[in-house]
Image (cartoon, rainbow, N blue to C red):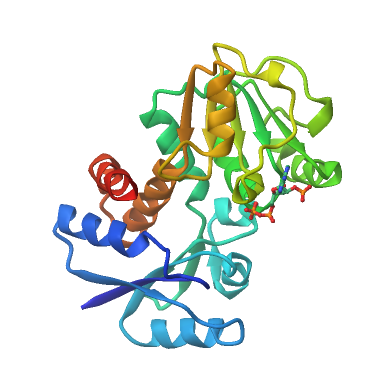
Length: 271
Ligand code: ATR
């Protein structure tokens, strides 16, 4: 039977086997999806063995997305722009293609939550790998602007230099931020420490939609902060996780699974 997997370290916490097994049932696809936890030294060898066997495709997560980018024999445009790969696929010609479905997953979830992106003023907090992965797909939705704000300003400038030809994108220092935004996306790792990026509370207006790429059973720290300041809506990243998985599944199997049912089950299991 066709084998799929997620590679990462640590991987025990991964929800990908659950998500893809449900997708397979939903779309009547015969496949097995499991979690693999190679050490740093073994990542590429383990991948090679996987594809030399019955492996047809895999997801790659922390800390191996950049190595997967190097490993791929061919890259999609969005993976090239992201500088990282979260999806590998073995083609019928034995070529390993690297893709990045994170940004598409975010856009899908924003749309499922009825957030308008065309002409929107978007503030993107953070300029690490997570931010880079979503910039291209967000710009493809023709927002009015994307302002990237980061604690280390130079990293925001680097992202602007990568994406400036794709749309109206600028950089700003976190503590210098002002203006009106329709959507604020938090891609920083601040939440992992229970912190909120140090931005002005005046940025949160009654019209503002908030998206935190992190998810948890309770409101994430950023969403709790924004909600208490009166944000219109706060969304966490669980839907993005399901969205990127749906995009990977479609790339492998040529059939797009429905994200909503799986998201509901995952949300139920979180609490
Ligand atoms: P990822 O791949 O998840 O994006 P990363 O590349 O390590 O991880 O990037 C983490 C991002 O979170 C960076 O933008 C980082 O800001 P710096 O570039 O200044 O380090 C941001 N970040 C982490 N902790 C933060 C905090 N407490 N407040 C604001 N930004 C934070």
